[in-house]
Length: 444
Image (cartoon, rainbow, N blue to C red; front, side):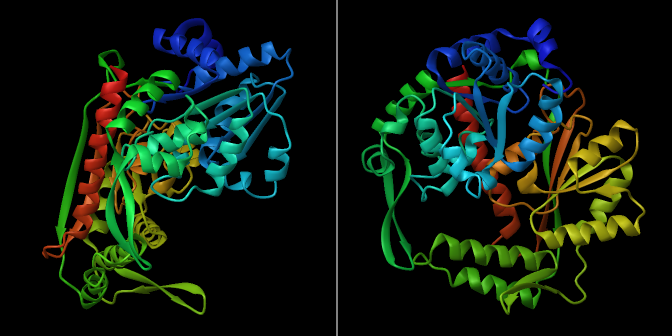
């Protein structure tokens, strides 16, 4: 809810759905707000935090956990200055939580844990449980009140939401061990890795769907966009550029072709990254335990001129995957005399002053900020993460946006049948349908 203070929310802007979910949080004690980005899940959580602090006579110990961007851009920049947080409120990032402060977190009796961007807790069934997920599970298991917040609980499949609820100990899901859930509630397919064949869970079976439907009802609130939001049009398009096939691309492609069904997903992902890099004029390689960059000689990336031409027209956000992409983009913008930055805070400040500016941001870092001042995003390069994509585009296209928005995916096409960059885009669109199905069914 960009631009609205908690006082304004409390006195004028609380909607019936938010008031309902405040009651559900206090009733369930462990609850997840699964609102679409921009629908305003922060203040219902904060309202309950204030109420819990009253119940604890002003002495509630509150822990706010999220990624560094969310803590910095939302909690510290927008919420803390309002002076509404309980006196014993502590904030920790997902990375620092598993570091030197872990012992202090474990040894403290928390009254409330707020886990923002809790889609990061999706591990445990389809992949090994992360250190962060293990810590959150241990902490929330013995904490009276737990609030999860996410706009993207469904990512690659319909299994991952269980992991989020399990690791937050919501709706009794924390009592089901991940290996038991995998065996009893999932369908698996035979896959191959470097150590031979293995069964990998790929989707919920009927029992799993029934279990999760019950868990959603008991511990989650879904709220999708509706007519009342008056969302402006959002255009998502692909801009394709024909480029020649280079020898370096062929070599990278050989890595993909050698990854048959017996290769691990990690090896396939590495091979695809190499091919995508070659399509954009460079290759990373390791030497003496250091990463180096090899720039393809005489390679002219048509994406660069497109980016420059578009950025001359107005404010833009450029999303990229590899750090070398940022180097090429920034260098071209400098040559064209176009002001740019890599900080969300700086970008917002420049726009508030009426200055022309371009934000060049890694696609994995587009979370939590409200950037309705900008309406156009260009994906110079993308990865396969639907959650990162979903979070990124909703920095601009969110409730409160009044202008039409546009997302443009840039695809270099050497004319072969493999369509490496196009398939990344295609993968994101398929995952989008999983998310939309969940939101429409549970939010209806």
